[in-house]
Image 1 (tube, rainbow, N blue to C red):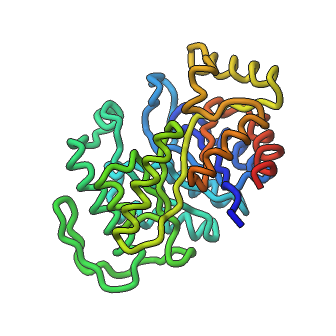
Image 2 (cartoon, rainbow, N blue to C red):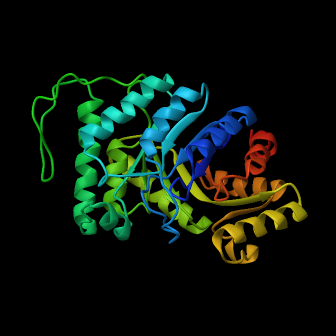
Length: 315
């Protein structure tokens, strides 16, 4: 039997999501039966609204881990440029202990130059950012989460005699998610290190193409294909009138109108029934988890609708 598509809520934490908002979102997810709450890892609004605040992703996740009991938590994705890999590995391991084994780590290169400049992070050319990502993946996966002796001498990091490594609760380690467009080097890294590959805001054709690249890379690495997932903006209503009202709420939040017909090829947009039909086509294309990007984050009614109607319909 084909497993049901897993559903996670995805929140853009850099868009003025307060601690009170995070608590309300987490409590609503748990109460409504949503399996996982993920957040972006940014320090500056990516919509250009730089007056919006951004709490640190992993500090937030550690705090939420202590406030929840069943909800899985993670990033989609943490830029390798923000933290030293030894700091990141221990922070994620700490969250795994606090939560009792409910943490997932998404890791990528980082992409927002203005964000890096504003916060004093180096923003290297793409090839070098991929070098940093490759080193961090090896240090975290093989070093901190591995079992044998580990030393590392790379272009960007040197580690000597890495001992006293606290091990995560989850075995062999928390799921490690890579995200991107499944280019050749990213696919090779995913086949070696990742437990899931995620792509963002993709059309159905792009999903099929990118998943094929990951499957092929895994086959070349002598490994079974890893799960493939999609993250995309979501607009869902109980009926057409409810959908139109929520589209207006999103337009107010964005500061521009939402043309549902124009966005349906990349967004998940429609009534519950329409969204279920759309996600069934994703399942047929090999998508195993969907991250529903909920932009109007104080709209908890939508969160409850997802848990009450969408999740059971996909089971």
